[in-house]
Length: 398
Image (cartoon, rainbow, N blue to C red; front, side, top):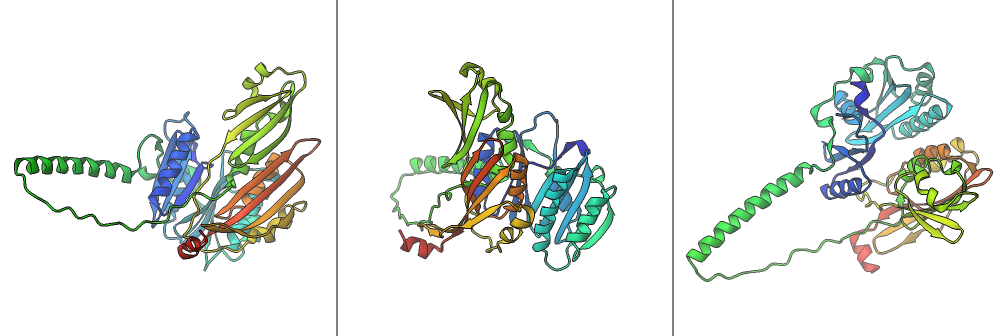
């Protein structure tokens, strides 16, 4: 059964079904094939997968949460197919579900996650350490989770028992509330048809009274894209540094569109498309080629409490060369935000995925990104932390 676990899926959470409908629509547009959707208290957990090679998959995060249902806050660590798997939750919210390579970079990534989880610990949370967990992982837990209960010799991933709710289904299947809406709509149509027939058979006068419904404020997603973009860069830019006859010069984020510039060496334009990863559109501009990849904006999680900016405190510990400059705060009709400029003078795509782990704060968005390729990769980012304005304040600024 352990071969069928989904760990590093595309995950979203919300208390509103309209948000889940939007996320499922985005998942279909991005080419995901399967999804699992469950409810934890007032929160919906959504995970999507693009894998079509397996006949069945099960969501690891949900299975772990259901297995240890009595624990309000916990973290589960296990060794799986040569990777270190980490699942962390707090109450009805999933904090992390990720698999790290069992090497120096993977352990550094795991240490960063443990530090962030320990900063948000409440009461007496538990760390569940599966059997056969490497000693270096145990030592990291003893170092960073010293205030937690360390429970050793827990069940391995092969011993976990998935439930039917954790099984992924086709992305084309509607979520439960849409199925209920369709049944309700069909019943309503039948009732209206019956009422119309009765009205026609027994005509009479009727007075129609129309009442106005309150108009809710409709919000557009704020500017920027999710921090998950940094996680996807190794896949999006796979092979860019080794294109035959072409040189990758730069990549930047323009609005909600990722753009990459390629310049030719001995390569020909008609031979380039077969070398590119999926999802890129090619535009020839004189002697160079511009590639574009569209990104989706995401709605703000408006009902979350304001979190402390722990990533600012931890940044230089895990990224000594990272330069951070605070920008001027801003505000529009619906949102207010804080802004920072981040710069890494020498980096690589693997380090940028670890930077994404540092920036895992809800309502944090990337509004600017520039990667300059040369002898070393240089990265510049602009990030914003958004907060929804009260409806009276937002309306007063319009």
